[in-house]
Image (cartoon, rainbow, N blue to C red; front, side, top):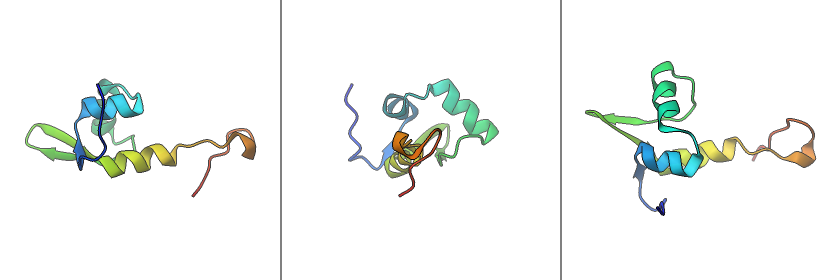
Length: 74
């Protein structure tokens, strides 16, 4: 399945495919508030902004040249 981030909002299956984070983990994190990934709830549907998902992924980049455990900050 190919995911296009040209769409403004993604469902949890698409976020799972892009990030590698299991849908069950996304659901648990939504309930506990432990994942810094904003979402929209429309009735029973959950949607994530494609830009928020990209920003989330970029915020977790690791720069190995910066030393052990260092993160890259843009």
